[in-house]
Image (cartoon, rainbow, N blue to C red):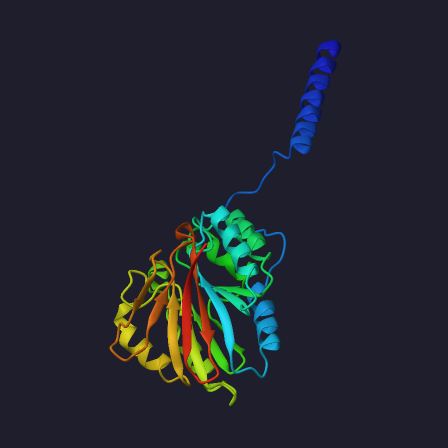
Length: 276
């Protein structure tokens, strides 16, 4: 019996030892796809917004890129980064959301690491796909709060969470409290405004019960130039409210395109669609 017990103990020890070595050697232990433990850079929007403000200080012309909905298209996003880096006329990049497809932590990390290769700073808005699972929490850690704003030269950029459907209308989206507080804190040097969001008014994500009020509130900003969005994966320009304010959307990364906006010193702007 003693010999038998010793053999069983040795057998258990060998099984345990082999399992530990196998897992450690082959890196088979991994976290759940929706585990919010994140490695690498975080708090990106705040850090990069500060870089944008510093680099554009005192300027009356600003040039930036709009991209959106990179989601599962990693190769296409890498090509977009290479294309943008090849330009000499870009100050920063705004990503209008859906950086992930399923809200999984690894998706955020992979896309962040690709965008970190940009030669200019970038910021990312929250998309509806980014809200899936624990995605909103991961987004907050890596990029920051869903509502934020920054200044680039004499232009104010208001970046908003417009994914009301994903929150079942249980919180204020759009957040009019944030909009009012942000507008009241504007410095006197701001002479024009650009508003960015993921889902534009009339979309399935936007709380269209307050669409008219939303438009009224953003038009109270100094020199509202235009709005930008993503979500529908196609290039389009719409004037939803008959007030001359255009909403620009670029195609998803699978369409291999982005938009370059040039905000000019005379208060006007132009843009170009880049296919890469």
